[in-house]
Length: 345
Ligand SMILES: NC(=O)c1ccc[n+]([C@@H]2O[C@H](COP(=O)([O-])OP(=O)(O)OC[C@H]3O[C@@H](n4cnc5c(N)ncnc54)[C@H](OP(=O)(O)O)[C@@H]3O)[C@@H](O)[C@H]2O)c1
Image (cartoon, rainbow, N blue to C red; front, side, top):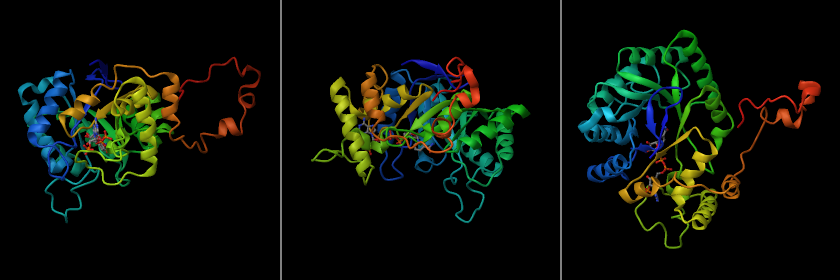
């Protein structure tokens, strides 16, 4: 395992983050406590120190398992959790048991601290934008939690780039805790973050914690086999796009003697160097497989073949520069001599 600084912070995290949406059987497809423990132990033995959970995963069971597993050496671990989704066990009639407002933020954090059996959360993400709470309320609430020592760093997930960019500027100008990481879905068939989120994170120096790297398991190719996946899976329906993408992933895996899962995870980290993969697994063998995703290189042709699986539709305003405006209309005769690629994608 190698390590890196998380975004612009001085926090040291492993190059792979362990996802825990599979910890607990409350949602019908997760891992038992023993199986979760085995995965946690294998991740620790592999040098991992970065763990991703959420207040709502498996109705709170994932956070409870994490709390038990880290108890022997809490300080070693960088625990990231999230708030936004409705608090487990809340009154269905309670309007404020979910969302990004300060009331749900503070109550969720109190409950997460209890389940995690800790006095601080290393990284708290806003889980998803709720399109109703103003950034100032979110940022000031997060900053108060940091000042109270209950949260050390803040991040944001599943939110449009323009919102993050605006929020970051407000936090910096007001001296509030600014985001150090963005969490979002990314894989060869789901490249939406390449349009605005990735350039935004590079410009702001944020790490990107990527999930859905295996398309929920589809990109491993196990659903393409005539005999089917050969193991119980959480995925129910695999669409044609994922099936076709998995064929390319499997072909390249065979070419280089790696597993499809390793290829799918590897592609994201090489395509965007500020990506830290969140590996999800439901059993030990899957986790062991996924931990081998970083220590090899693909050729440029192999990377291109994976990227070509689903070309990113580039639309206005991203196309305006090349399709309509020529460089010399802006730079005059200096075009070709002036280095303009300050934030290359
Ligand atoms: N911020 C967010 O909104 C958000 C959303 C989702 C997830 N996350 C985080 O990201 C983590 C990973 O997300 P994800 O579950 O969507 O990721 P994923 O990596 O696309 O899918 C993981 C699933 O693929 C299957 N799998 C994993 N490794 C495999 C292997 N080596 N071979 C074959 N199948 C394998 C397992 O399901 P089966 O065994 O059932 O096939 C596993 O549950 C989560 O645990 C969570 O921490 C965050």
